[in-house]
Length: 132
Image (cartoon, rainbow, N blue to C red; front, side, top):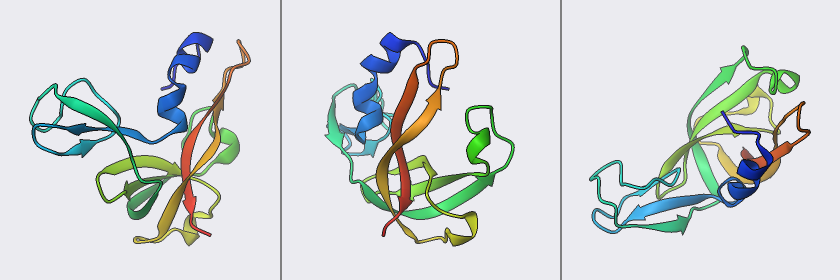
């Protein structure tokens, strides 16, 4: 779950507004999200890399039981997306569930992710939509 504290939202914006992953200088694998150690070889010798913004659907799930932030856009489509250099799980937007197919091309887009009713902070980030 995303923290909705205004300072935390502000400090983490680069990772929500761009697809930033890490490439391990030891084993060469790319992973997302960024971490302090490689999940494959445990090396701490990493460099940040910008990931491709276009990928294809490897698998997806349609989620009907969602929290209050997502209720207005239910059902939510979550996809396993192959970006070529790595795979990520992300929300698929701007599509009907029946239009999503394995192998469909998707592109990253900037969308609203949630809102905090107490502080009024609106959180934006990247989701994926079918390539038009």
